[in-house]
Image (cartoon, rainbow, N blue to C red; front, top):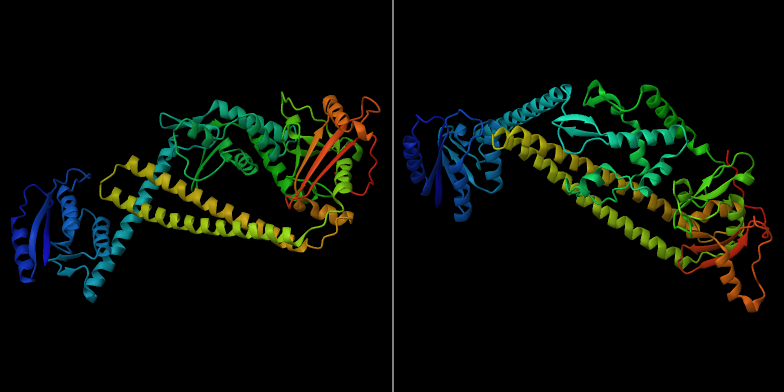
Length: 530
């Protein structure tokens, strides 16, 4: 049977000859042939120990498939208890026994005394690991107290790292002030603000860093502004100069972007929005996320008028954006709702179509569940990486700044993966609810106005509304010239619309043309905004 010897001394004055001779005799006594010997020496003057002999031994025993290593005493395996335990653990995982002469230990032995010593070693190693973590966190606290930027390359939107210090990013700070003004003074919703930022090309922090090739984003994401990202940004206390790290909170006026009164007003409004969200409208927007402007392709949103419901309109979102080229007109909410109702009320939900969509949704849920399982595996790997990283730092193989940066990246990856799990689980919850709704719609009767309002959104794939200009009208009249069904404007204020409704089954399409003056639909579908 083959074996190797590993010897390590702590000072230049010590000699490894005696260790080597006694280990060679022990190996021979136990029936092993020593194929090679490896040794390391260190002065103890530096924490960054380079164990070239140990590294050579690892390569040798791997290449020669050697399963027995002789060592003089436990302390010779590493500089610290955590490093020693790491070596023993990795060797045990590879089914390699370490025979330690002085303590009379064989690491693969099931002897109770051996197991007791190894368990004690593991406890001490864990204690050292926690101690080094506490020291690292303490160092980060001290850095932040002195204005340091902290670990990691990605800072909060509105701030950047300059010469190791956290400072305000003037360009992003102006964006934040504009967001706050739109939310607080112009009464924009966070959804409208997110859409506005995306349409006008204002990049998120991640998008900036990726475009500059500073980071490689590993988690799939469109990297756009969302309602959630705007809401989270408006909640950040750092905007008022309050910096928080763990349980420590520090005040730094040099980091202030918003005054306290503005920040508090935003928090109060967001809290009130959450409380009154369910009561903001008597009915929800029945065409939410399915109604689009055919002139430019943007979504159409509900816009409350100043007095009666006659002034409540669906409006193209592009019309909210400055320098918009969209020429679409607003349309009265009740007029469009009743136009759609008039066209689709005879629609019959076919069981086959429902079953097909349910099958697609169930397939998507299964895909999401598989993705969640894969992400959980990644989280386990990240946990192991963090343990190995701590071990490397304690062993003196990496510097503190490298340790902090890698640890920060692992923690950020951990958070990103956790977010993906939450996102996938939330999506699965919505898909499951949609499946339940679809199963209840097999016998739905859209002729009933209340049932129509409750169910139409899930039955429609997409609604496109086009404001017809003079060219559109003339083309329509030219095509229908032989049928005598021409469009003619009664007056300059009359607007004609082309309505295209695509149902969820992807086979049923409804087309209708109507105007704001000459079409009188039954006024059955009404939405009163409070």
